[in-house]
Image (cartoon, rainbow, N blue to C red):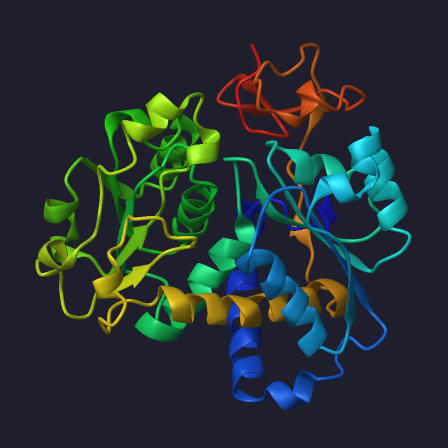
Amino acid sequence: MYSKNLIDIEAMTTAQIDKLVKKAKKIMQSPADYRHACDGKILATLFYEPSTRTQMSFQTAMLKLGGRTIGFDNPMNSSVAKGENLKDTVSVISGYADIIAMRHPVEGTAMAASLYSDIPVINCGDGGHLHPTQTLTDIVTLSCEKGRLDNLKIGVCGDLLNGRTVHSLIKALVKYENNSFTLISTPELGVPLYIIDILEKHNCKYTISHSLADAVKDLDMLYMTRIQRERFKSEEDYLSQKDVFVLDKEKLANARDDMIILHPLPRVNEITVDIDDDPRAMYFKQAQYGMFGRMALILLLLQDEDFVLKVRDREICEHRCKNPKCVTQTEEYLPNYSYEKLGMHMCDYCDKRID
């Protein structure tokens, strides 16, 4: 089964990722050729959670392609404030627009939305779960700045437990040969077990480190992330983690001259401001690359009939997902979709095990 929805970067093949990167580079080289590529098309941005870069990047991407945008950036300004469920919102909006870009604080919401949409749905972040379009931004940046997507030594640092950008990035880069990862975090904020399973499934080398100064020494790319305050149960838990990893000039002195530093932004205090002028700092340029990547994605989803994404086999499970962060906990009408992995039933929305 195939669809036009980008919910999880794992659904994209390397050939599709490469096709998108190639398209993004063509747009960069000759943007005037694409000024009317989406004339008459409408993008709906449904942002239930704060965003600067992702939302504006999508809006700008559509405008530069000649299309228009509608949507909201605060659910309290929509019928959600009146109690409207996700199904009804998406069913209505899919009759107004040609494509939806959606962010939501609850895990699995984009997948749930795709069940009721007649137009492509793009996941722009669902809680601490996934963020595939940020990964496309990262991959376009890597391809342009390093010239390859394979044979890379990649360090990811920060909140690896809740960092949806990290989860999606690892899912994409394990597809390419001879990439290795250094996972830099506190023990409490290490990557979820399902990400470890993905690394091991692809026979991808990885090491776990609790020292940024040591880990940075032999990397092609360092991917810094913020400690995600909004994902913690208490302020006390957040404060115990927030200043553990800070990239400063002293630590950066240990890194190679050709290493690049990426960050999905927003930055809080995990990269000191004096690093911004270092030629290895790519995070502001990375945001610009992201706009071109999203332009390419919009074009491929709307205009390329062959650009379809595989949907994993799913079935109805007898039991309901018990993950309190899963969309099934709030949208009670959703079917109990699951998929099988190593003999276990996994929630098709949030990728957590169903007991």
